[in-house]
Image (cartoon, rainbow, N blue to C red; front, side, top):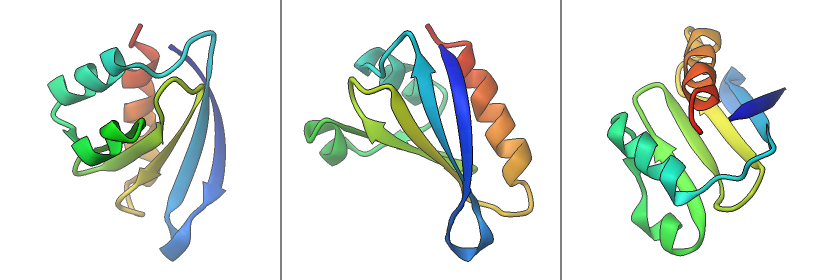
Length: 94
């Protein structure tokens, strides 16, 4: 999945990154891959057509079938490193 990143400041000094996917949309297949990687998926959001996936480092959210997701780093100190790590993971998803 090819991504384009837009960074914005979030509350409490954290970094929030908005990504647009180029040429593909977010699907349940992506959600399943995130589950396999240890992300916790909120089923109530899925029933409403939204992705809300959290790990100990980041939260990924956005509508299913869309070309845009938001990724928030949980820890300010390691935000850049954590965002780069999840970027690599998402870029390797088909």
